[in-house]
Amino acid sequence: MSKLKLIIQREFIAKVRNKSFIVMTFLSPLIMVGMGALIYFLTQKNEEKVKKIVYVDDSGMFLKEDFKDTKTTHYLDYTAIGIAETKKRVEAGNYYGVLLIPQQDSLELLAKSIEFYSKDSPGMSLMNSLESKIESKIRNEKLNKFGIDIKKIKASRIHTDIKMFNFSGEESSKLINGLKIGVGLIAGYLLMMFVIIYGTSVMRSVIEEKTSRIIEIIVSSVKPFQLMMGKILGNASAGLLQFFIWGIILFVITTVASSMFGVDIVEMQTARVPVDQIDAVKQVTAGDKGAVIIQEILKLPILKIFVLFIFYFLGGFMLYSSLFAAIGAAVDNETDTQQFMLPIMLPLILGVYVGFATVINDPHGSIAVLFSHIPFTSPIVMLMRVPFGVSWYELVISMALLLVTFVLMVWLAAKIYRVGILMYGKKPTYKDLYTWLKYKG
Image (tube, rainbow, N blue to C red; front, side, top):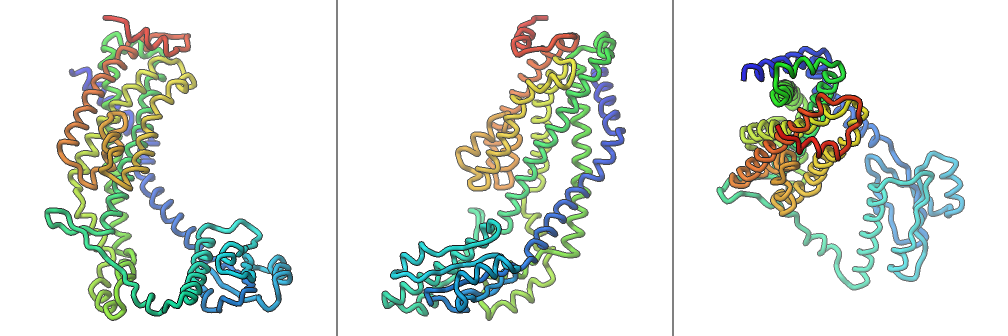
């Protein structure tokens, strides 16, 4: 046991003293925040570009108010000069495109014959906006033909804001649901990245010791299983330390940012509030822009998420790291690892895709539940489900299956490790790995 402890300490100290580890520990959160800020800035700059769109309405149905200018789109009526001259001016000038509304005998034919010309392929949001405007106008014209009063239809429209509660009476909200999705996706994605980064780190460490022949000296005094477990636990400890530091830095940055800038909660809350109540809402919420998000975050099961993240991080990391260590022991150089990496990476990638595809829409659906119990995907998928509330019996089943599979995989990986670590000069195959698994002793 003392030898295992020494190996863990050695691996941990060697990892945390590495210059790249120190730099990336403190630099990575700043890079992540900076990338987010850059994406937001570029998005805003992209939206600042005003698109000039001219339209030619040969149908005579559309009015100027049907094409209202927005922050990013301006509409110009070129009906008087005709489509041929309009195209020439648009091609020669600084215009985005031309919308042609032809004359047709029926509204149905009109809806299918409208054309849009542009120098470049238009974005989906722009086309959706144009189609929405045209559909609304044609629909109103059709209602008029049916003798239906459009004013009454507009007056009958009402917005519904459903208040959400669980059966214990605790109130929920759309914002907290969005936060749950965000927290779950971030936790699952971070775990995948940590497993890949630190798992490959274990593999490289084994390959370096093997190629330098220092491993022959080490195994003369330490059992291969102890050496493998020491490397896995040492790297896992370094990974947890790095994660804790990242969490503290990101928490400080987001807290300061939310208090300084906040999120425009007022606009979010007043967007669907009657006009006569907007002022009252603003008075209540004007000083709580950042506080609202903090309060919503505190409603999440933070302690439960934290504890389960540690468990699934350690379980998932040790499960996959044992396989990475076995691969490192089986090969002589990193190039030879490529043939064995795909079967290990596939479950991780599958877990992320299943989480993104199913947990967001239905966190308690059969697919999400199934993959949150499969040991090779449960560390990722279950973490994505936890913010939405998962029963304890599901967690117990998932955790028990992960532990049992981890023990089995470590036992199998150790059989490959103890043989492969002293094998040189031969590129191993899957048949060789199977043969090593059958060795006794």
